[in-house]
Every structure is written in structure tokens, then in C-alpha cells.
Length: 177
Length: 163
Image (tube, rainbow over all chains, first blue to last red; front, side):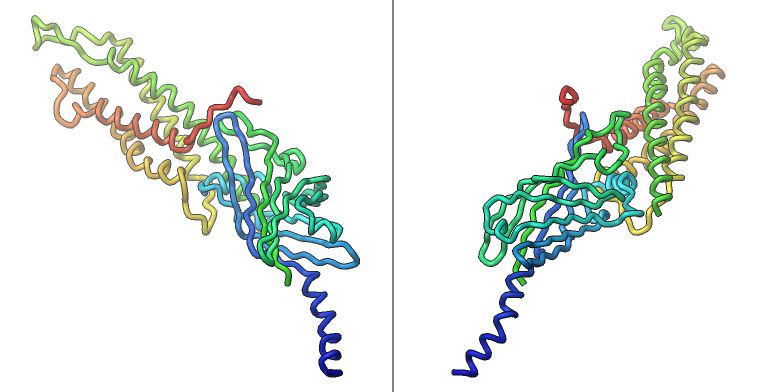
């Protein structure tokens, strides 16, 4: 009996640790651009992510290589790489800090810090939706990015530039470690 | 690498602009082509041509030559644009590139055949042999060229009224 209690006590920190760490197991990040004669989306499924919770707060980090976004046209993707200075700044990083209690709510009000194209931009009060699927938690939402936020020269087609807004939709599935 | 990407974008922007500019004399050459055909007197079919007037023919030749020269510059910028290693062409750009195999030979052949046709007419002959394919080759070239422009512009979502 004493041995069992000792074992449980020893295992408790490990169990708590397991609940406090999250890993990104599935992701779909999509940028959307709009032009008067075109609407295009580019998607990446290659994001890596990690979450750590301690002292009632959680830090999440998502990183995705710029070159993994695929719009279905290699010429456009290379032009995108050029426009966002993807060779100099090959990663998009998104960080957020949330109160641990927020992870149980169906909607999350997040402040996001985004590093992209050599700029760091903060987006406050981004609404994310949370859905639980067994052990996994799915987080979806849209980041209201713009070209001007990241000092991206807007690409043009037939001399007309794309719209400034380049919303990035996020669909991620997290699993406790 | 970023420098290479910048150079590539620059070259392809010039390629795009020149390609659209080239379409203008190309279309104009086709429009005036009917006036550049020789016409003979029905009462004297073996006699000298009664049309075109040299003005219509000269205009057709000038527009055709301008098209060929601009096409050459357009092609140069596409060829000169740096290639990015490890990137395989995918999507609409593949059709755009494949159509080169039709309109590039066409753009070389069309003026040659036009020159042959003109030479035969100047010798008082009816246009014959390979020279008689001048207009067919020109139309095929124009079709492939137009399709090449549409290939990289499709699909269009006409929402220009939205800001």
C-alpha cells in the first residue's frame, strides 16, 4: 500500500507536466489575396507548434516556413516568396500568451504576435474558436493581416495591385503531451 | 537567393508588360491583313494585281515586323529570368510555357512565309506552296499567343466594382 502511494506521488508531477504541454499535430494555414480580377489562396500544412502552460498562463508558438505555402501555381508562389522577402526571412512565427482558463472556453480572445517578412506585428483581440475532439483541441480563426503591416510591396497584375488585406485563416489541432 | 528572386520578379514583370504590348501590333497586323491581300481583276486574272495599294501592304509589314521584334524582347526576358533550383513548374504556368512550342515557331515562320508570299506576288505569280500557309500559321500563332495570355490570367473573378 505504501509502495502504491509512493508511486502515485512520484508520478503526479509527471502527470501534471503532461497536461501542461501541448503539441501541434495538424495544421492548415491559408493566406487569401484579392485582386479586382483574381481571388487566390495559398495553403501550408507544414506548421510546427508547441504550447507550455505554467502559473495559470500558457505560451503557444507556431512556426511555418514561408516556402511551404502552395497556391497551386509555382510562378505565383515564387512571386509571393519574393514579395514577402522569404529568402531573407524564411519563417512565419506566431506567438500568443493565454490564461490557462481560456483553453476551456469555446471562443478565445487572443493577442497574437506575428513575425513575418522581417517585421513583428501585434494583433489584439483576435477571436479564435475552440472545439474539443476527444483529447485533441481544434483552434480555428482568422488573423487580420495586411500588406502594409509587414511592409510588403503589394504585387500587381495588369498594373493593378492586390488589396491590402491578406487575411490568414488558421485551423490547428493541438494534443496534450 | 533574395536577390535572385528580386531579379526574377523584375524580369517577369517586364516580360508581362512587353507581352501585352506585343499583342497590340499583333492584333492590328491581323486586322489590316485582309487589306494586304493581293486582288486581281476578274476580267484579267493573269494580269497584274489591282490591290493591295502599297499603303495597306506596308502597314501590314510594319505591324508584323514590330510584333516580331517585340516578341523577341518579350521572350528574352522570360528566358533571362533566373531559374530557382528545385522548383518544378506547376499550375497555369505550365500551359503558358508549353504554348511557347506553338507560338515561338509560328512567330519565326509567319514573317518568312509572308516574305515568300510577297516575293511570289511581286513576280506576278499566284501565291503557292508553303507560302500559301502564311495566314494559317499567323492565325495559329495568334491563337496560341492569346491562349498563353489567358492561361496565366485564368480564372478571372470580375469584382472590379469592389474596392
